[in-house]
Structures are given as C-alpha cells and as structure tokens.
Image (cartoon, rainbow, N blue to C red; front, side, top):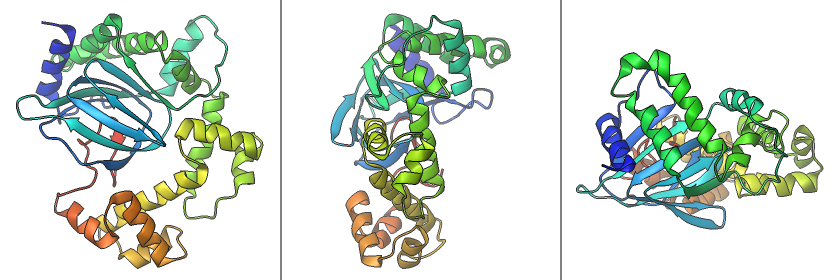
Length: 305
C-alpha cells in the first residue's frame, strides 16, 4: 500500500466528521463532479489524494490532482470545480487551515532567509515523499484520538516544517512574518472585507498597507489575482447571496444593503458571477441544486460560513 493509499483510506473513514480535537484539519470525499462555483479560499495547506479539482484564479487556470500539494496564503476569491469524481473513484482530499503563530515559531527556529517578492498568494506542486509521510502521520491521529493531546502539535509542526522546506516555503514564511509584504496585503484585504459596503478609497487602503497606490495595486493583484475593486465586488456579491439564501431580504433590498447603488447593476454582476439572476440562483441553492457547499471545493469557505 502506498502512502497516498493509506491517506485515502483514513480520509474516507473520517470525511464529513471533523475532529473536535483537531478542528483545523479537514478531510472529505465527493462521488460526483460539480459545476464551476465561485468561492473564497481561506489560508490553508491541502492535498488531493484521488480525483481532480480545477481552479480559476484571476486569469490563471490549473488542475490540482492526486499527490499534489496546494498552499493558499491569503483569503483569495476564485472559481473552483471538482472535475474528476465518481461513485467508484470519488474525489478525496485533506487539508489543514494555517496557523500563523505556529508558522512564526517554526520560522524563528530555522535559518534566516531573505524575503522573496510576492508572486502570488497561492501555489501548487507535487508533494514529496517526506511531505506525504507527514500528512499520513497527522491523519493517523484520527484513528487514534487518545494520542491527539500528546502528538497533534508535534505532527502538525512536522507537516508545516516539510511545507516550509518545500517549493512554496517562501510563501509560508510570509504568512509567518507580521511585517511581511504579504501580511500588509492581507491587512488591506481584511479591511476591504470588513468595510465592503463602503466606497473603496484606494489611497486610504494603500496607506493602511504602508504602500503607494501604484505599488499597492500591483502587489494586491499579485496576491489575490484580482484588483482591489474586483475583490470588493466579489465580497459584496457573496454576502448578498448569503443573505438571500438565509431569507433576510429580497434581491433589490440586499443589493443596496451590500453597497450597490443600482439594482440593475447588482443583478447584472450577480448573474455574471453566479450564472443566474439572484432570485433563480438562490431558489436553486435552497433546493440543493447549485451553489457552493462545504464539500464542493478543497479549502474553500462556502456562503454562509
């Protein structure tokens, strides 16, 4: 049995049943393909074990297949799709939401390395044998819950160490650094998420990140793969969708509540993102016929989460 086979078997046993003692670890399976869903990814490390996920981030498209490791270092807006899955060979994946404090502790213990330019807020690479082994040992704790209090922190440290030493270690180091370029951009992203109903003041947000407007724009787009204005639009539309699914208000009222000044513009941009007008899309989502759900795409936060 290969390491991937072992990880797959553990993931399938525990998919959909998150451990209260390992709350940032997730494992799930999906026995059918999905439509392309707009989602927001939280900072996480993940591994596809079986099947394939396709992602569209900005103007880039890539596939995340068996044995491939993915790092998402910021709250990125993207489109995702499980494009290879069946009842005989379901999509199987595992992941761990990142803890900046843990990464910071590890980086302090490692040799100092120069900060690299921001190229993107995500990366995909083939997992090494040592990384697969670290994933396997951490996941085995799900079968041995009595060992979690003693072993969980040690094994999570091992997994993060392997990731830090890998292809995208530089990206993870920027998560660990409170004064890194990436963390300044994440601070601006958080401000946009918290103030998404307000008119976007580029000068104020750039100042928050400690950058000129032109430098901020370029670095923001490098991390998020979209402009600050597009990112705000994405947040507004996701929040509008969440409110309508929760029956908080109708389309026109919600559109104004999330910052739109024109009902027609809201409806047009909503349809462009979600593939249907607000009323039709939310009706479909309530019936369970479309839209993001927790199991749809690895590492993504569904609407309403």
